[in-house]
Length: 421
Length: 190
Image (cartoon, rainbow over all chains, first blue to last red; front, side, top):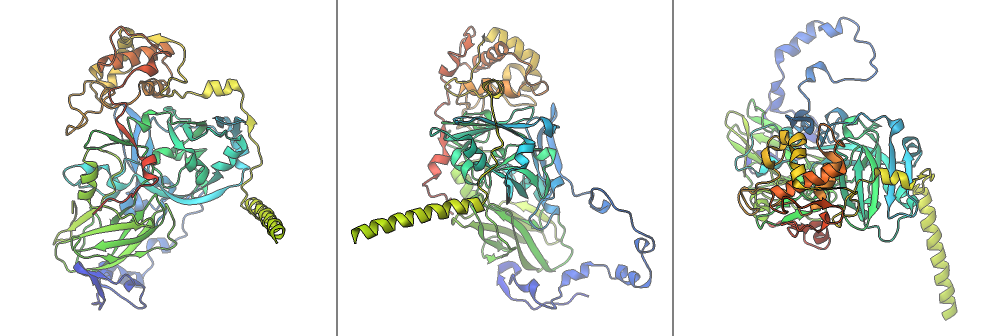
C-alpha cells in the first residue's frame, strides 16, 4: 500500500510544503500503518456489530469504551483531595475545542455542589445601586459567546526544572483548555449598578469553600469579560463553575472565577493571597512580578509528542496548538532540525483571538534522529521565546507563566522524548 | 458661512449620537434591569474583603500565645511544626533569602501585607472546616504566624487598629506588571 511521495521540501529535517495534504489523490506511506489483513477480512464477512441491531438511544452520550484512556490526569494534596489540579489530555485530542468533561480543573478547596435556586450574584462597593441577581434573572439577560482558551498561570511549570520532564504533553501543558463560553457581557450589569468614578478595580469572589477571590482591573471587566452560563452549548459543569463563571478572555486562569457570587467594585486591589503569595513570579533580583494577567503566546506540538512511537520512516503530519492572551496567532513556525531552519505551518481557520489555534505541517521522517519544535507569533508581534531567553529574564524560580518553545526529540527507533533546545 | 458650519457640526454631532445609541441597541447592550436592590445587611454579611489599609477587619483581638493553641488544633497537621511546612506550604522559618537558589517564600520573606493573612485564613482556612474560626482566633493565629516569622513580639495583641500598620519585610518586593506593560515593549529578546 505504501507509495513514495514526491513532495516539496520547505525546510531542513524533512518539513514539507504545508499544502501537501490538501492535494487531490495524494497517498502517503503512513497509510501502511493500517493492517491489510484486517481490511481484507471486512470484504468477506460482517463484523459482529454489523450482524445485529446496534444499541438504543442514550440520554447523554459517552465516549467509546475504546477511548477510556482519554481522561484527565488528576493531582491533589494528600491531606485535601479538593485542592489540586486535573489536566486536559492534549496529546489525545485534535482540533481546538476541549470536550467539557476534559476541561482542566484547578480547585482551591473542591467542587461546590451548588443549588442554582439558592445562588445569587451581588454587585456592590463603588456603585450607586448595589444589586443582587438570582440565576433566573441572569438567564433573561442578552447573551454573547466567546471562543477562548483558559490557561492556569501555573501551566507548563515543569519547564522551569533543570531536567526536561518526561511526561505526556497534556500532563505538562494541559492546564489549558478551550471552549465556547456563552453568557452576559459583564458591562451590562456593571452599567445597571451605576459605577462611581472612583471604581478602578473589581474583586471577584466564588462560592466555593475557599471563597476564592482576586482583583481585576475595571478596564478588563468593561472590555470583554462575560458572566458565563454555558460552556460548549450546555450549562457549565460543576467543576468549571456551575452555575456562573467569570470569563476574562486571554488572562490567567485564576481570574476566571468559578461559582461567581460577588463583585466588589473598589479603587484598589484587595491584595488577596492569590495575587500576592501566589500567582506572582519571583525574579532573580528578589523582586516579584505581580498582576501578570495576560497569558503570553505559546505553542507546542501535540503530535507527535512524548509517548508516541513512530513505527517507520515516511510522511507524518505534525500537529499542535498555539494561543496568545494578547490576540490572534498570526504565525506558527515549525523546525525539524533542532531550530536551524523553520517552515510556516498551516493554521486551521477561523483563527480567533485569545483562542486555541490548531497548526499542522507535513513532515517526511527519514528514520534518523530528529528534533522538532514550534514557535508562535501573535498579532502584537510577540514571538514565543526560547527557553534560554525566558530563563535569562525570569530566572528559574518564578513558578508561573512558563511559555518557552517546547522541543521533542525523535530517536532512530521512533521514540519521542522531551529535550531542552 | 461661519453659522452654516456651526449648524452643520451640530447636525453631525446629533447624527453621530443617534447612530451610536441605535447601534448599541442592536448589539443588545442594554439589559432588562432585573437586579434587586442589595440591602446593607446583605452586603455586610457577604463582604469578606480585608484591604491592606485594614478596611474590612472585624472587631476582636489576639496574640501569639493563644494563637499557638489555635495553630496546633487547626493548622499543624498540614503546615508542620512552627509553620515549617508539610503537605501544605511552609509559612515560617525561611532558611534562604528570595535571591537564593532555591528561595524560601514564607510569610516573613515573601508576603507583602499582614492583612492578607487575616483575609485568607478567614475565607479559606482550615481547609477541612473553613469558617470555623472566630475573629479572636484568627487575630491570634495571625499573631502567632507573624511572631514565628520574627515580625512581632510574642505578646503583641493584634486587632483591627494595628494589623494594617505592621511592616512586612517584603512589602516593597513587587512590581506591578499590569501598569508597567501598558506602554512597554512586551517581547523577550531572542
